[in-house]
Image (cartoon, rainbow, N blue to C red; front, side):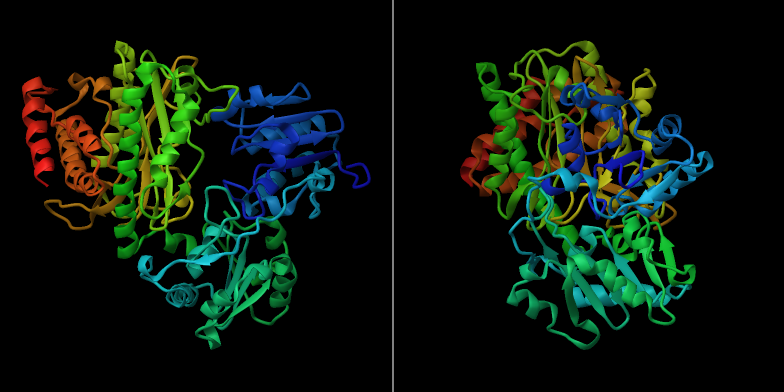
Length: 616
């Protein structure tokens, strides 16, 4: 820092593609601080080291960082810049790696710091890398192409689809720059293994009306892929260029007359953006046309993603049944449960591993919304504590993410009330009908209303997009203010929760797809179809709190589970799991505004299904 004449240096928890999940070689914040959470920013001065992160990670950060570090319980850029203004003398410089700042992030920092006469200094050679002598190398795996069986749109079709949007744009761009890793992977129907849990590979793309420049580590592109990418040349001929040459080649393109590059500011890094001058050579939108197009799944993507969720439900049911049997014996822990979840998924067709590190949390650990067990923190599972498991799988035909919270003993009245109110929030979003083009942020409070009514709340988002063998958190779909409006064919999670510090945590998460709603007066309305297919814990549901519509929705959902997962369980010869599923999807009897399940109904419902299974 001294020879560069900077008084502070900013270290974000991201990579050059502004990814949420990053490769070990990009985990600079974790290497510097010890904090391994997925969100955070550090600032280093000559005498201080400070970390900012959000409420999900406050306790984790305090556990992982040593006494050299200070924790700021905030994640806003405003908090960081206010601190810098107090700590750094006027006129001094604050260094940053422009590859790790989005366009929007840089603008916010600059806007906040400039009035205090603090200067942001772009340093493209990362300072952490200079001292990180054992930085992990680039993974050795080559990118691979998706099989034709899971593709409806070939990559030339997708290229033409994006080029049509370039032509239709009234501001007349001549090319679009793709920086997010899932943009290039989606465009070319390719997958990789550079990022843990995410099938991506390091890449950029510059797509114009007559050229396609793909920036990759070219030594990893096999002859088979070269043929695949150049089967239709002329305007569909892919030029393979070195990943590290993206800045140089972008500058070469910008030297041409009458060009204008379209970038999505959310995922374009400042290192590339600052090259696009003068201003008439730049066109910006929050998201690139690839991200907004990818958000709407075609019919093949919808079908195979639903199929993946059926098989995933089998794996989760195997896990929950196993826990019911094993936990009373007293030998299982948060770690053994997480490992068993991975084991169950690995046996399913098209499995490609977990989609994120499993959140397996018992008792007070579950009060940490994004806790993952370690040898130092793992608790033994008991029938006396609530247990939360948030897990997901990557499959060749889809990505899954589901959370279930259970209690194998006698929950307290407050635990049942909190769980039921979380469930009510999940149901209210799932059953809502809304005009096409409605933003999720306008529906988000439906997930919180039942909690708010009794003074409870949760401190994380209510939902995120999910991909087809892609990222488990796929932007720009979801319920936040910067998500795009819902259209038919978008997949999102719905995941309200409640967390009582040092006691227990509850989250109920399902994936749903937007589908046309049948209304009396219009065909332009949408609703959600839940594609996660695992029953909720009956032991925690207080049916006296549910209204008739919510009970009808539950019964309909359980009918769907039986009709879709039942045949798959039978096909796989899982009789015990089939019986468990039938028991836990017994319809709720509806009488007035409350419901009960009688033992006679349970017997009459399960027995015929068991007999039917034996006959099959």
